[in-house]
Image: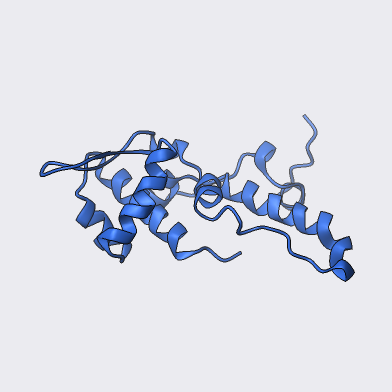
Amino acid sequence: MRLTRQTEIAISILVSCARRRRQIDTNLAAAEAGTSKDRAAHVVLQLSKAGWIATRRGRFGGLKLLQPPDHILLGDVVRLTQPRAFALETSNQEAFLGPLLRDLTNSMLDLLDCHSIADLVEAHRDVQCPADMMPPALRLAQGHDGRA
């Protein structure tokens, strides 16, 4: 899986807001994301529409998280910022791979859903994906057989 620059910017902006736990300047968020203010503004609009951040214009404006960082899942950020990232484009000869590729896509997104913006803010913390959210192959590899 390859993350687009837009996804990287979105994650960076969310992490910047989460680290400070208060309103931050848009210029600072753009600088920390390594992008221009205009490009950051485009991403901020998406994040705002998703209900993850609030924006305030003007001299005392900026960005602020609306959700706790542990409620913003990385899988959701990827789904928002690159919705066609996992579009299946196969030729007629490869059509039989469709179900397998769909399962692979869903497993990757499920794995990303095990991690949140809070995990990136607290990168030193050992994060474990709950067994009921793990893809089946990962669940078996870690010794979770699915039995209660």
